[in-house]
Amino acid sequence: MTTVVMLSPGFPAEMAYFTRALASSGARVIGVGDQPPSALPAAARDALAHYEHVSLADEGAVFAALHGLARHARFDQVECLWEPYMILAARIRETFGLPGMSVLETVPFRDKERMKQVLDAAGVRTPRHVSTRTVKGVWDAAERIGYPIIVKPIAGAGSADTYRVDSSAELSETLPLLRHVPEVSVEEFVDGEEFTFDTVCADGKILFENVMWYRPRPLQMKMHEWISPVSIALRDLSVPDLQPGREMGAQVLAALGFRTGFTHMEWYRTASGEAVFGEIAARPPGARVVDLMNYSTDGDLYVAWAEAVLHGQLRTPLRQHYNAGTIFKRAQGAGRITRIEGLDALRAAYGDDIVLVDLLPIGAPRRDWRALLISDGWVVVRHHELQRVIEMTERFASDLRLYAA
Image (cartoon, rainbow, N blue to C red; front, side, top):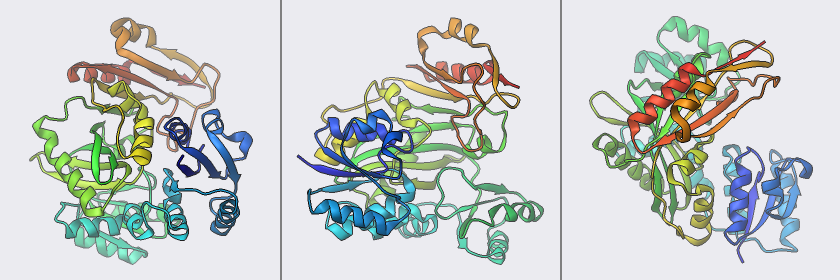
């Protein structure tokens, strides 16, 4: 039996399902994380053969715990799907002589500037970009690239601390917001629609791929509270408009030498049909996208990932049966949820095409929409026809309203 060390097996929340999938796919799973054992989600706690409670930010303490563990038990591989500790996982592999991504292989997935340098050399179309640690460097990069620009952390995740800047006046206002970020990437703003290219791979072979369409782009979702962010996992990946992005995705994986696990790439399609690389992470997408893939395929991508990393194959091949759309809702007002309007009419209109409704109950405090994309709840709809899903997501975005006071 393969023994897997899983870093942070219970946080973020989706990690518990990956931990459970490892155990259900035949692994003995040892967890190492900074959550107290009592705080572990049941899905993770029940799947673990052993748990080491240690601060993941204290690398010395992590290695001390693992060296102590190694005197009593053999472990065969290390997995980490939470971005801040992927370099730590790579160092553990190197120290204990385990298979998987090395530090050198992991760095381009964490350092956005290094990532783009590798891809530039491979001929992938990336936005014009400059990295810098100084305010002067940002100003110089803006002058060289030209407005509009995107300014974001070199080692960030998602849209955190990411800003579109259209002028020197806006740059003056934005720079103080980035004082806490040690190094930023200044990039050309690419005007186009934004998609993902998500994969499960084994030994360099793509076993499953997903393309998701953001409506609107994530940066707009982040800027305006009134927006209900929508993401649609697409059923038909063979349509011509998606081929440049899929081909680029395969080229990116090859250039970065990715072998086994989950990846999440974002890319842009311009009005001319050009595919432009955005960024890639060697982890699954967040914001419940793995669950959305499950609704699209009627499968289990948590298990698919576990089978890929443990057995190098998917025991049950997966394919998309539906277009599946997620709508995240943000309440109007502050405080606690006081009422929900429009849900009954939408349920009457769309019936079984609505597969999940998970909204905060009346009386619950609002969540911070800037910190959590899931905000105050989410809805999932699906259908074979894309136009039907577009219609449903637009109706839920406009007609379903939560109020807080």
